[in-house]
Picture (cartoon, rainbow, N blue to C red):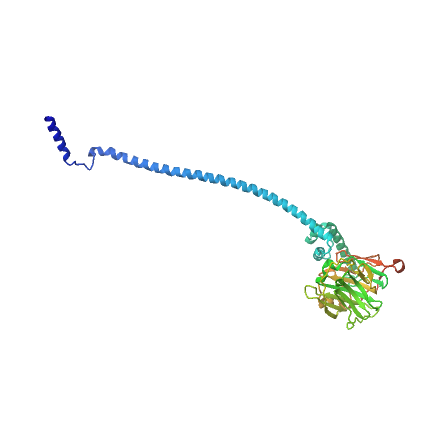
Length: 415
């Protein structure tokens, strides 16, 4: 029974509410518990920072991988760039060679190239009246390019330019300091067999796009269809000749031949006259004008849109004309100071070139593509002073009977 009483008393104790102290540790035990709190906080902070460090390490690994990838890509790009530069260099060299060959082919083979006369004219204006050595001559950019295009042509132009300057100097010395304005010699043609062949082809300089022809002529006869100079190629659209038909002018340009009874020339046998024919050009207006001694005789419209005829006979003759390789329309004349330009000159220029009957030196005029002054006085060559090398050769259809054209000191009025 005692045991039962004890159990009941023990159970009764569970029925009473348990009083929980707000502070489970007595005052005397609070010191050690508080001592552990900062350590736990520090441990938590350390764990948090470890997590941050771990995250940064992971990001660093990613970045390292990315940098490695970029470096690999950069290396590949540089390698490809080097290959590209090498290939570009090879292509440039190959292209340059093809271009050089093409340019040289055009200049050497294709007579339609205008690059040489253009470069020559510009270079000569820069050189002036100063003779240069070969090395100094090449310092002029246009001359250097001429050399680059064709060495042989460049050397020929170099020699001709210095020879021309020397002749100018000699003329200046002879006349006591002023440039000679009148030639020493002219050429006389018999109107039967004697003439001059030249290498000048109007198509080479695209004269159908505009031209000026200037020359001095002394008629020793007034007769039907006589030409001072010119050519007619295989086609009637390729006229380029200048002369008379009795008292009328007879001038052919392109598809047109002026032979109008109302346009007379009024020339007398034995006197010198200055003729200028200008053509505005197929692409710009087609007007053709004819002047004698500075006065306008005729204005008309012609068409010249065909060049490079394959029929042959394209080069110009003096003392008559070239007709498909045959000498025709011979004229008994004296001829001097023939100049051809690849541009139309205006009336003021015509007046200046006539200069009241005294020939002027046209060597420095713009657009000059052919210039024969007949100053040689001997030999069988008439030099083209334009620098284009279209020299003339004294010729005859029957040299044993008629001889060659003759040099004469009878020239237009001297200044």
